[in-house]
Length: 453
Length: 106
Image (cartoon, rainbow over all chains, first blue to last red; front, top):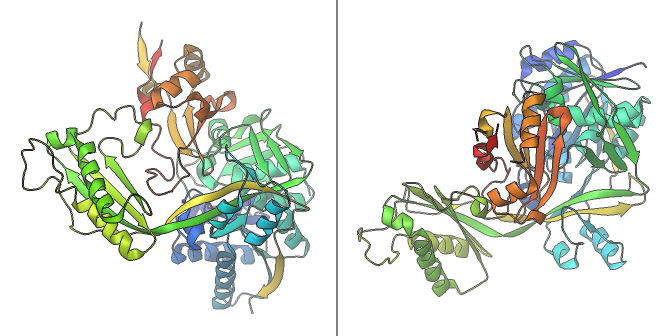
């Protein structure tokens, strides 16, 4: 095989639906694979902490249906990674069921459906910690402690190419992956056909966000990647989009701290000496990527924990004298909360929009508040009832703040509604660490089954 | 000295999560000349970013001039993980605005 092609229609399947027009154009090129990533930690810790999806089922199913029907029609494998936003076992099971349902509904001839799990039992991690096998922190975090582990609700490990390759070797026509590195989804297909690691991982790197590597800006459009022994080319499928040197090189640095390195389970993709060349109107070719295998394998772990029930209140301020003293207004409300609930055992946050609500302490203009402010109040507590009363106190008491010489003595803030709203449980990322494994399949059990009729 | 605001020179100025503990910033130029001008101006360095955002320099984990994309890129550590209660910007997507007003000497 001299070259292999893969199309990617969506950089985060389910988060917003793929655009059918450019996807159909991509399918018409008769690619060798159709693949997409369906996960992200961008969505915050709530989906993993509560084992839910951030994406609506209808959109997930829409994309899976488009991809499955196309893949079965042209008889090529379809690969999905990080099922259902988080890649937990329940999300994998949900996608597997969706694939089976869609196949049945469309009377698709029987095909091999492979899937793997990525969830990690807390006891495995605990045993590692207790045996002195360090769970190393990423991005400045210290090593994982048992206390942090205990505060975690769910953990997923980031699979590399290994479980995908195993399922491809077993002949899977469709693969639904648990949490996995975006690039591994695509790299596994190229490696399966004997292409070098350097090009394979770069292929994955450039395809994983679909049309984010094209210009003009426009997400959810299909792009086509082609790998050879020494290069990767990427082509925009949308009639008005192009993959240019600027857009492809620009994408190399998207969403990562450093534009030159990408770590996956088993090694490092080194992009320092990448050479970008526009080879036709819509296509850019990249050479010079290098994969550096690591000595052992360390997999990334993601973990999220639930902090408590959460309610949200909203209040507005227009009086310029009150705006100038908004800190005192919040202090009054916080004091009322303390009188009712004490000093701790809950969390309370104010975001002051119109001053520094978006950037907090990093806001250079926080000393120049706007002519009106919006305060968003979040209260977190162990029970729903307490969270509601806490947040209502912290919101409604803004109305009664006692400021010396205040002109408006009939109420200090405006309300769009005089209630507080229940939000998703408050969660936090408890784990952003790496753990050593004996091999790349250790945490990722695979299953091969059938679907269709 | 004549200056021009960064927003009037750069093609793209953006910020986004890089994992759950970092936010990364990209400033991308249309031409090598504009990229060189800004790189050599000394207006965008670890020190100027640290001052603009009120961050200790050790919170800036990466700072790179990325020639293939005519881009300057830096990353910072968040003060709490993305999406924890009180975090105002789960995606880190609106943290770039102060960069737009940086004055670049011509």
